[in-house]
Length: 250
Image (cartoon, rainbow, N blue to C red):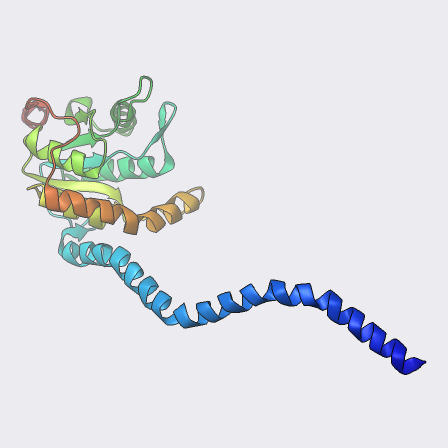
Protein backbone atom coordinates (compact mmCIF):
# COMPACT_ATOMS: atom_id res chain seq x y z
CA UNK A 1 0.00 0.00 0.00
CA UNK A 2 2.90 2.46 0.66
CA UNK A 3 4.31 2.42 -2.84
CA UNK A 4 1.05 3.17 -4.68
CA UNK A 5 0.28 5.94 -2.19
CA UNK A 6 3.75 7.46 -2.74
CA UNK A 7 3.22 7.33 -6.48
CA UNK A 8 -0.12 9.06 -6.11
CA UNK A 9 1.41 11.82 -3.99
CA UNK A 10 4.24 12.25 -6.49
CA UNK A 11 1.75 12.55 -9.37
CA UNK A 12 -0.25 15.11 -7.38
CA UNK A 13 2.89 17.12 -6.64
CA UNK A 14 3.81 17.14 -10.32
CA UNK A 15 0.34 18.46 -11.24
CA UNK A 16 0.74 21.26 -8.66
CA UNK A 17 4.26 22.11 -9.78
CA UNK A 18 3.50 22.19 -13.50
CA UNK A 19 1.97 25.73 -13.40
CA UNK A 20 4.89 26.95 -11.28
CA UNK A 21 7.33 25.68 -13.90
CA UNK A 22 5.38 27.56 -16.57
CA UNK A 23 5.49 30.73 -14.45
CA UNK A 24 9.21 30.37 -13.82
CA UNK A 25 10.12 29.87 -17.48
CA UNK A 26 9.84 33.58 -18.40
CA UNK A 27 11.86 34.51 -15.32
CA UNK A 28 14.61 32.17 -16.44
CA UNK A 29 14.58 33.75 -19.90
CA UNK A 30 14.79 37.24 -18.41
CA UNK A 31 17.65 36.13 -16.17
CA UNK A 32 19.53 34.75 -19.16
CA UNK A 33 18.88 37.95 -21.10
CA UNK A 34 20.12 40.04 -18.18
CA UNK A 35 23.32 38.01 -18.04
CA UNK A 36 23.92 38.54 -21.77
CA UNK A 37 23.26 42.29 -21.45
CA UNK A 38 25.25 42.84 -18.26
CA UNK A 39 28.45 43.95 -19.98
CA UNK A 40 26.81 46.30 -22.54
CA UNK A 41 24.67 47.86 -19.81
CA UNK A 42 27.71 48.34 -17.60
CA UNK A 43 29.58 50.04 -20.44
CA UNK A 44 26.57 52.22 -21.24
CA UNK A 45 26.20 53.20 -17.59
CA UNK A 46 29.87 54.11 -17.43
CA UNK A 47 29.59 56.28 -20.54
CA UNK A 48 26.53 58.06 -19.15
CA UNK A 49 28.28 58.68 -15.84
CA UNK A 50 31.29 60.09 -17.69
CA UNK A 51 29.06 62.32 -19.83
CA UNK A 52 27.47 63.77 -16.69
CA UNK A 53 30.67 64.12 -14.66
CA UNK A 54 33.07 65.33 -17.36
CA UNK A 55 31.67 68.88 -17.78
CA UNK A 56 31.83 69.49 -14.03
CA UNK A 57 35.37 68.15 -13.94
CA UNK A 58 36.28 70.56 -16.73
CA UNK A 59 34.74 73.48 -14.80
CA UNK A 60 36.74 72.61 -11.68
CA UNK A 61 39.98 72.38 -13.67
CA UNK A 62 39.38 75.42 -15.85
CA UNK A 63 38.53 77.75 -12.96
CA UNK A 64 41.03 76.47 -10.41
CA UNK A 65 43.28 79.55 -10.67
CA UNK A 66 40.35 81.94 -10.30
CA UNK A 67 38.76 80.46 -7.17
CA UNK A 68 40.28 82.07 -4.10
CA UNK A 69 39.77 82.75 -0.41
CA UNK A 70 38.65 86.15 0.91
CA UNK A 71 42.22 86.81 2.01
CA UNK A 72 43.96 86.13 -1.30
CA UNK A 73 41.36 87.04 -3.94
CA UNK A 74 42.52 90.04 -6.01
CA UNK A 75 40.62 93.27 -5.45
CA UNK A 76 37.89 93.97 -8.00
CA UNK A 77 35.44 96.87 -8.23
CA UNK A 78 32.33 94.72 -7.83
CA UNK A 79 31.14 91.59 -6.05
CA UNK A 80 28.32 89.74 -7.80
CA UNK A 81 26.25 87.99 -5.11
CA UNK A 82 23.99 85.31 -6.59
CA UNK A 83 20.56 84.70 -5.09
CA UNK A 84 19.74 81.44 -3.33
CA UNK A 85 16.19 81.73 -2.07
CA UNK A 86 14.46 83.67 0.68
CA UNK A 87 12.19 82.59 3.52
CA UNK A 88 9.63 85.34 3.90
CA UNK A 89 11.61 88.50 4.64
CA UNK A 90 14.83 86.65 5.44
CA UNK A 91 17.50 85.07 3.26
CA UNK A 92 17.74 81.30 3.26
CA UNK A 93 20.62 79.88 5.33
CA UNK A 94 22.80 79.41 2.23
CA UNK A 95 22.02 82.90 0.92
CA UNK A 96 22.81 84.41 4.32
CA UNK A 97 26.22 82.76 4.16
CA UNK A 98 26.83 84.28 0.71
CA UNK A 99 25.84 87.70 1.99
CA UNK A 100 28.10 87.37 5.04
CA UNK A 101 30.95 86.54 2.71
CA UNK A 102 30.17 89.50 0.45
CA UNK A 103 30.02 91.86 3.46
CA UNK A 104 33.39 90.50 4.58
CA UNK A 105 34.89 91.25 1.17
CA UNK A 106 33.51 94.79 1.33
CA UNK A 107 34.87 95.42 4.82
CA UNK A 108 38.27 94.03 3.79
CA UNK A 109 38.38 96.52 0.92
CA UNK A 110 38.43 93.72 -1.66
CA UNK A 111 35.36 95.14 -3.44
CA UNK A 112 33.73 98.56 -3.55
CA UNK A 113 30.19 97.74 -4.67
CA UNK A 114 27.94 94.73 -4.17
CA UNK A 115 25.67 93.75 -7.08
CA UNK A 116 22.98 91.49 -5.63
CA UNK A 117 21.27 89.44 -8.33
CA UNK A 118 18.13 87.43 -7.77
CA UNK A 119 14.54 86.63 -8.65
CA UNK A 120 11.64 89.08 -8.42
CA UNK A 121 9.18 87.56 -10.91
CA UNK A 122 6.46 86.78 -8.35
CA UNK A 123 4.69 89.43 -6.33
CA UNK A 124 5.82 89.24 -2.71
CA UNK A 125 9.03 87.40 -3.59
CA UNK A 126 11.92 89.85 -3.82
CA UNK A 127 15.36 88.34 -3.42
CA UNK A 128 17.43 91.45 -4.27
CA UNK A 129 15.66 93.70 -1.77
CA UNK A 130 15.90 91.07 0.97
CA UNK A 131 19.61 90.74 0.19
CA UNK A 132 20.06 94.51 0.30
CA UNK A 133 18.34 94.82 3.70
CA UNK A 134 20.47 92.03 5.14
CA UNK A 135 23.69 93.65 3.92
CA UNK A 136 22.71 97.06 5.29
CA UNK A 137 22.02 95.41 8.66
CA UNK A 138 25.55 94.00 8.49
CA UNK A 139 27.29 97.30 7.96
CA UNK A 140 27.35 97.75 4.19
CA UNK A 141 26.21 101.26 3.12
CA UNK A 142 23.00 101.18 1.11
CA UNK A 143 24.49 103.37 -1.62
CA UNK A 144 27.12 100.66 -2.23
CA UNK A 145 24.52 97.99 -2.98
CA UNK A 146 22.95 97.65 -6.44
CA UNK A 147 20.00 95.36 -7.09
CA UNK A 148 19.50 93.24 -10.20
CA UNK A 149 15.89 92.05 -10.16
CA UNK A 150 16.24 89.69 -13.13
CA UNK A 151 19.00 87.33 -12.08
CA UNK A 152 16.88 84.29 -12.92
CA UNK A 153 19.81 81.89 -13.15
CA UNK A 154 23.58 81.98 -13.01
CA UNK A 155 24.09 82.69 -16.70
CA UNK A 156 21.55 85.51 -16.69
CA UNK A 157 23.20 87.12 -13.66
CA UNK A 158 26.61 87.00 -15.34
CA UNK A 159 25.41 88.32 -18.70
CA UNK A 160 23.34 91.07 -17.11
CA UNK A 161 26.31 92.16 -15.01
CA UNK A 162 28.27 92.58 -18.24
CA UNK A 163 25.65 93.94 -20.64
CA UNK A 164 23.13 95.74 -18.44
CA UNK A 165 25.32 96.98 -15.58
CA UNK A 166 28.44 97.45 -17.70
CA UNK A 167 30.76 95.59 -15.31
CA UNK A 168 34.09 94.37 -16.69
CA UNK A 169 35.75 92.84 -13.63
CA UNK A 170 34.12 91.26 -10.58
CA UNK A 171 34.28 88.66 -7.85
CA UNK A 172 31.36 86.23 -7.90
CA UNK A 173 30.17 85.10 -4.46
CA UNK A 174 28.32 81.82 -3.92
CA UNK A 175 28.75 78.42 -2.26
CA UNK A 176 31.82 76.31 -3.01
CA UNK A 177 29.75 73.61 -4.71
CA UNK A 178 28.41 76.22 -7.14
CA UNK A 179 31.57 78.26 -7.58
CA UNK A 180 33.28 76.41 -10.49
CA UNK A 181 30.14 76.70 -12.63
CA UNK A 182 29.54 80.32 -11.62
CA UNK A 183 33.10 81.43 -12.42
CA UNK A 184 33.13 79.50 -15.71
CA UNK A 185 29.85 81.10 -16.83
CA UNK A 186 30.88 84.62 -15.80
CA UNK A 187 34.18 84.32 -17.65
CA UNK A 188 32.36 82.95 -20.70
CA UNK A 189 30.09 86.01 -20.53
CA UNK A 190 33.14 88.22 -21.05
CA UNK A 191 33.86 89.17 -17.45
CA UNK A 192 37.26 89.16 -15.81
CA UNK A 193 35.80 87.05 -13.03
CA UNK A 194 37.24 85.70 -9.81
CA UNK A 195 35.31 83.65 -7.30
CA UNK A 196 35.02 83.24 -3.56
CA UNK A 197 32.95 80.40 -2.17
CA UNK A 198 31.32 79.70 1.17
CA UNK A 199 31.98 76.32 2.72
CA UNK A 200 28.38 75.82 3.71
CA UNK A 201 28.66 72.60 5.71
CA UNK A 202 27.35 73.26 9.18
CA UNK A 203 24.38 72.81 11.53
CA UNK A 204 21.09 73.37 9.73
CA UNK A 205 22.74 73.46 6.30
CA UNK A 206 23.81 69.86 5.78
CA UNK A 207 20.84 68.82 3.62
CA UNK A 208 20.93 71.96 1.45
CA UNK A 209 24.68 71.61 0.95
CA UNK A 210 24.48 67.90 0.11
CA UNK A 211 21.67 68.60 -2.36
CA UNK A 212 23.79 71.36 -3.90
CA UNK A 213 26.72 69.05 -4.53
CA UNK A 214 24.36 66.35 -5.86
CA UNK A 215 22.67 68.60 -8.40
CA UNK A 216 25.78 70.32 -9.75
CA UNK A 217 26.66 67.66 -12.37
CA UNK A 218 23.21 68.00 -13.96
CA UNK A 219 23.24 71.81 -13.58
CA UNK A 220 26.58 71.83 -15.41
CA UNK A 221 24.99 69.98 -18.33
CA UNK A 222 22.51 72.85 -18.67
CA UNK A 223 25.36 75.32 -18.34
CA UNK A 224 27.03 73.72 -21.36
CA UNK A 225 24.15 74.99 -23.48
CA UNK A 226 24.73 78.51 -22.20
CA UNK A 227 28.46 78.20 -22.79
CA UNK A 228 28.00 77.09 -26.38
CA UNK A 229 25.04 79.27 -27.43
CA UNK A 230 25.84 82.45 -25.46
CA UNK A 231 22.10 83.07 -25.32
CA UNK A 232 20.67 86.41 -24.27
CA UNK A 233 19.32 86.64 -20.72
CA UNK A 234 15.63 85.89 -20.28
CA UNK A 235 15.07 89.50 -19.25
CA UNK A 236 17.00 92.13 -21.17
CA UNK A 237 16.59 95.87 -20.97
CA UNK A 238 18.53 99.06 -21.36
CA UNK A 239 21.86 99.82 -19.73
CA UNK A 240 21.53 100.66 -16.04
CA UNK A 241 24.00 103.11 -14.44
CA UNK A 242 23.56 101.79 -10.90
CA UNK A 243 27.01 100.22 -10.53
CA UNK A 244 28.85 103.22 -12.01
CA UNK A 245 26.88 105.55 -9.74
CA UNK A 246 27.66 103.42 -6.69
CA UNK A 247 31.35 103.30 -7.56
CA UNK A 248 31.46 107.09 -7.90
CA UNK A 249 29.60 107.77 -4.64
CA UNK A 250 31.59 108.51 -1.46
